[in-house]
Picture 1 (cartoon, rainbow, N blue to C red):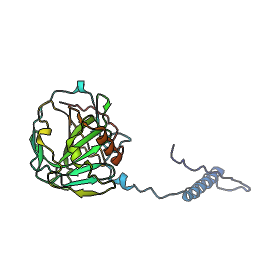
Picture 2 (tube, rainbow, N blue to C red):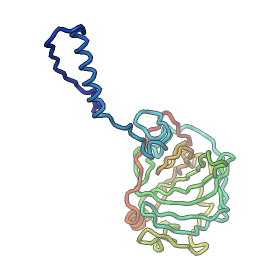
Picture 3 (cartoon, rainbow, N blue to C red):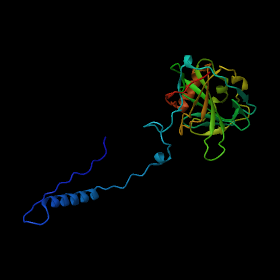
Picture 4 (cartoon, one colour):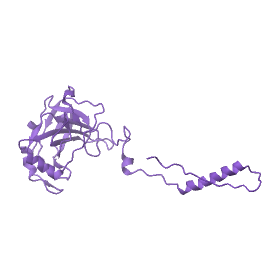
Length: 271
């Protein structure tokens, strides 16, 4: 839809007596005055930008309210390029201390003291949460569930964004997952949370594969607002299992909370 056009102005000019002022000048004067009056009648104050418009960064492409490093993506395994990443795991304090039903996801919060290092950069373990169905695809396949283990480097200044390392595990239906079993019955039915007994839910270092080729890696974003594009993603190649009952229960609690896959825009995925 096009914007409002300039008002159409009509004037009737009648000349009854001779005058020193040319008729053409009278016409111009009359039309100009009419247009000014009409313009004043429809004048509006300029629209003020909304909070979202004023706070948003300038889009890279028309129509986008974010940049070009968005997540999740569809990973084409045969197009993944060879890469080498050093991963070190320190999960000595990886006992979840708080379990929360946030309405849109089930989240486990961890105390400080555990970290994962990628290529010499150390990220502190913060939380883990679920998506049903999976957000990432592998060769076009969407799995029934995905777990994100979120690690973060706090910003050094208020102007710096935080940096993230998110490790993703894709689930298919199969055997029961013992980690999920350890907390699933304790998830609140409503949007609330509760403290967990120490040691009840623990992420084991043995469950975090650290060999080259165990993960797909790419640069991307958070998959929820504000879609911050400072995320290193590691998606485990091996598909893990959870029972149909576990997946259905988590889905019932959090609903469909997967973001659609995003375009790569020239990015590469390495393994």
